[in-house]
Image (cartoon, rainbow, N blue to C red):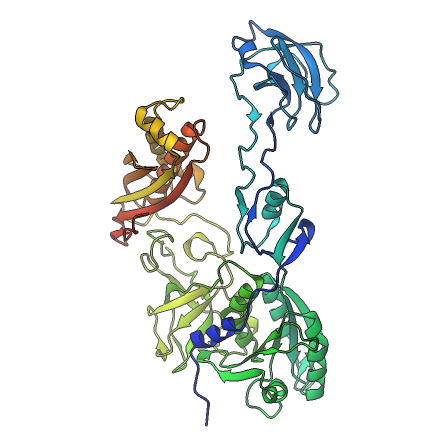
Length: 600
């Protein structure tokens, strides 16, 4: 009698409940790449750490050069030479200047920098230090000066716990005073293939033998998941060999993944060895492929933390699906990621028909349909709720359908088509789900080679379309008072922000490479002063072939940037938040409105 099938979600929940992030360790920055930050990281140093020059030139007093021009140069006595890294602190008084290089500390008394190109001095290495410099252009206070803390102040957050550390994160940590970090180490995953029929890749198979493709598959998928693959080789169908391989591996790995030997055959060695121990449960999961699954936690010989073990089927397509659906989320939790990334299931339609097994959710390796002369356009864009636009069309990656042995066809798979357990026959045009596994973003902005492209919308009918976006700039009480009283030193903030937002909406294709050049026929940018924030709304209209959501978002974003730029002299802590599309109308997908969130 066959065991009852366990739903995919139930099995995955049991897996995730049994794993936890690896214990944090402290690592120097050079060894922390790919690890996950274990706790929030505040800045120890300001960035920049001191007022410094943004240009090679001369540090001056702005008052001395306010009237400088090529016709009436201002001559200043040069009192110092300041390369980057100098600890010299010469004073710059009236009528004097100091030659300064990019990154060098601004000397006391100076409040601006004149680039060398705006003087009578030659640029480039080897130029002698002049006794007098002629300044040919004015430099207002702050010109080419990078102020201490312009980017970040000590105590400000730099990185959040749960961040997977890439090079840019390590650079930020170094610049803010950190030489090592408390991280969850990279997860070491031992990969062991089983089966007497396996021969190494490249070797000539004998009668009844096949190449071992599972080891390369799992090693690659482990690496793609941000973990460290540890090859454990292959074992045949001898229980003693499997026991020996696991005993040798356990001290050196954090997870084990085996392939093969988990079904009900007479030579299924993994199940034969592990099932009697009671540490690994072998179950039937309601998925196809990948129904036979084993999972448990093996005890370490030294009494340390247990080692989760995933016992996957031997068919390569089953391995591929199991890795994406079950193993990858567990590796994310072991890594300590802020959120366990469950691959989203997006809306799609079947380009052709195929069969699906009754009572099991199907995960069919699929390709995106490239045969459409005019591919479907996601309108509104992906930020709108799933299903708001025309879904992509998918077809099986293998001409043979859904067989779990069709490994060669995996190379073409860009996605897994997801079919509900109660569906036995998929017809062309039927709704299905899709999990992307081959490209990070599918659909209409990729060509057949996977390269970014702009969607051709010439066949679409121009219609009236409108989009509304909103955003906020949170400000201090001092800023809000200055805005209400009209005393911001730079002028009328709201008027400047309105103009900036309107201009930006019209320039959206210049900023977003795949945005269409369309006629923007109306832009309204409104700003309202609330208690502790500036509320910004942008409404954009067109009578063209594609929507204007991006134009509305750009208008709000640039208007918000203009507000921050105008008020930063009063308080640099202004913060842009909650930029989003709130409504759209027109186009193939019709009208849509975001549900109002609760008041902050």
